[in-house]
Length: 57
Image 1 (cartoon, rainbow, N blue to C red):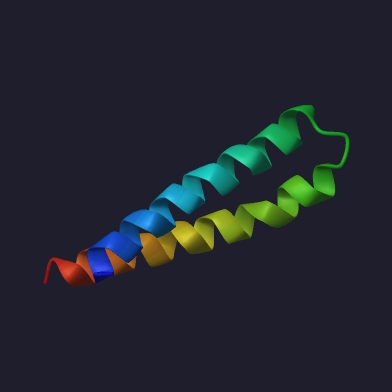
Image 2: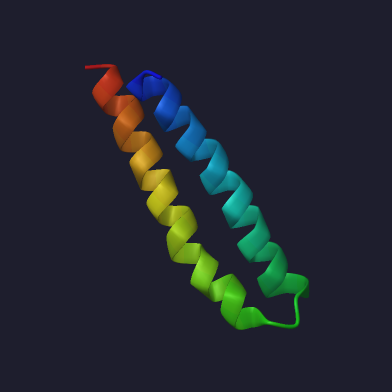
């Protein structure tokens, strides 16, 4: 896999995790899990953006 593909995969995972975290915060009974997932989503987002930027030069 190229860096760009890995970056795209990380961005997809970030969106899925972010949606799950926000869904848990909005509708879930266990808000702690939603709060704990937010940094994971933002870490994946950051890694994905860095990988995509590095692949473009």
